[in-house]
Image: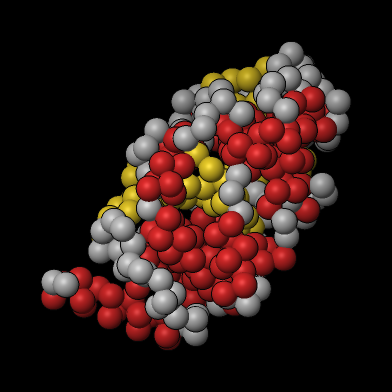
Length: 331
């Protein structure tokens, strides 16, 4: 082990001890690979992914790389082999699982964080019929999540909604701000920014409004080949993410300070507002398969996916490591 690697791991282990999180899986062999690739994505709700860096070093990885992405569809980056593990919104993950076998859903992280905002004359999801919704791309989280919402209330998302494609997440929000779209699905800090400017109003808050609040928003996703070839690395990386989620749940002030200091959030108060509101302990208590099934049924009803929901679950999920980690971490 190089001196640099030793110091990285010592620092990371010190950090885990300081925050009171259980130690690494010492009985396991070290990860089969030295480097692990995550996704850099501008959302405060994915704080566990950034807090996980030191924990990944403590788990035996020597290098943690964050890969940039512009379109709000994280699982496609993982499916393409550009990243090994990250979190993705459940609806867009389900959509990808229906057509790709290069990713696998392995755990839930938390519920909530997305808000559907609209012009004053739109009051419910049903009011989206015949109206425009800005999205970063077809297959993006905004497109698939709003499609799932529409299907839940009886809309045909393929025909009843006018989708306005804007290519990037920034342009998607700006289209709503500029009046080029009637509604917009945002994630923190976008809704908070729009509220501060008194732009639009909330139709759905997935943190509080049922049925969305009952299911996971963000699901932990692995590249299937990475998981198959490097099972020790896969389990250790999952443990780092789940420990990071526990930090967000038990010490939101510390997590918010980290996000602000590292520049992942505009300021501490905003980071604390978002992190303090989200149920990061949900991974311990809820069954992630229920979330996959719920959205698979909605998207199947809406004609977005053709795959039978049960077959999708059998092919696209693997809860073995999650169940082991729940026992080890005394969930």
